[in-house]
Length: 166
Image (tube, rainbow, N blue to C red):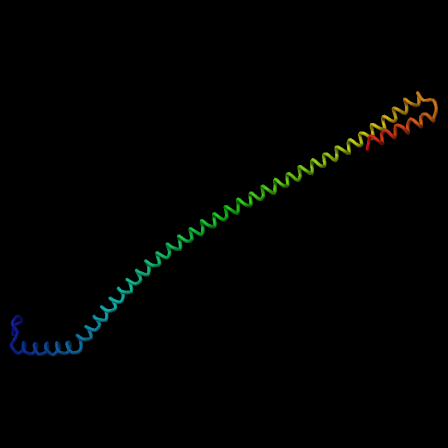
């Protein structure tokens, strides 16, 4: 027996064993392998379909996100516009209130000044009248001899001053 050329009996037995193994594999092994390959192919197809669906969903989500961002920007702009309008209104109202308050203060100050002026003028008139009376009294005492003439003259001056104050 040589290693390179096998015997005829060996060839028959090897062929018979190969046929039996092939039959067993074809009957029991290949269907299992085929089913597992088909199942794997189906899982791959399912995964690919899921990926396509996920990709489409991602596109939809991206569009929704862009729409949300656009709406958020619009709302932000509206809020900023409202805030600016409110700020302008508050500033305008504060300015008007400040002007009204300053007018009120100026008017009150003018009234107070006028009142103080009138009070000062009355006091000044009174003091001038008193001084005039004192001076006139001193001058008249010297020029009028009797008490009766002095008294009549003083009464007449008081009446004149009373009429001037009215």
